[in-house]
View (spheres, rainbow, N blue to C red):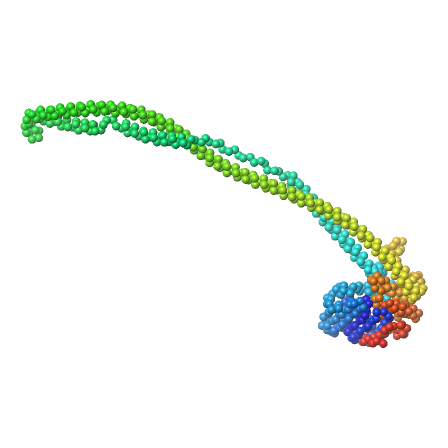
Length: 569
């Protein structure tokens, strides 16, 4: 961060204050211990990252507070709190609800900034006293090698995703092949419907001649009428009028005979009257006439009876012929009617057979259509599963190729990362030794991207070796002054390399009482080095040693009074 100004109000101290900083030059910030000099560093951290370097809250309970950070990079951040504890953050005119959003806007890694731009008496040896792994992480963050890590992590995630996808694709391939085999088996088991076989039709009955049957029936009716006439003729044996006439003539003859007997006796049998002799003769004549008429009538009756007998014989002969013809026609009609009934029964059976035949034919056609449709579906399913199997095989091949490419990319990233880290370590070592040549020419640092193990091997850790200090025992054997010189040189080297890696080499550097532990010679050498560095960037040196402050060529001098008030000298 290239800071323009830091303004605070009731931030870790009751008084409000604004610290104005130039783009380059040395700025001195003095004051007694506990006056609030370091709060400007904390204000930068809190404004940019939402938390202090100490990890404690900067606000005073029950009081409203404010911190404003302005930079030469074109952004400003304002954080405030009300007396009730409501917090608000603004980046420019926009509201930022989270620290992540704030960091995204100003593009700041707060931990990296602390390690490369802030050196305090409490933790002056951030790099020097760090473990090998911590040093490596610090340099990787400073150089932006986290991009390689993210890229490698992305490769690893992609590889994991590819493995998952490959597993799913392999499972899909297995399922598709299984379904394909089952579809092919179902298709092989499919059988076409059997050909339609109709049931035998009923045997056709002969069709009678209805015209001839009608003629026979008409002839029978004619014969029946003829038979009736013949029977009527047979019922007449003699003329009925002659028989009646004979009856009455016989009755009259009997009466005439009785009257003749009475007349012959000469006396009436009723009254006894005497009859004349002529009366008897008259009665005899009359009786004779009646007998003659009766004889003539009987002769006529006999002749007519004979004629009727002959006619009856002829009628009986005719009736016999009629009866014979009647029987023949009856048999012919019965036979024809039986044929007709048989024909009607056949027609009924034929109609039922046609209905059954049509129904069975429709059912067979529907079955054949369903089976053909089922075969078409089976072929379609087989084609679909074949396509799925082909696609799954292609996908497995593509995923396998992508996995190989990602593996090669991961190897390339690791190799490139190692090259960048090795070159960066050489740069840090050169710059740090350049600074050490100014603050203590008897010392040099050596940085290696690996650590030698006691067993003779190496580990993937960053090692720091110091030559010239500590009697050959390294950093831990150095005095506090020697350590401070090393820490200062390494900090300046880290700041310079970090700025170069980020494309900026003019970020503001904060030194919080780091020179207080140096001897007079060390302070003079470091002061000269800071003066040279201040020509290219702003250096803020915090100290409570007035004699040290007097030795430094500052472009601005501030004093923090007890309570936090800031006075420009």
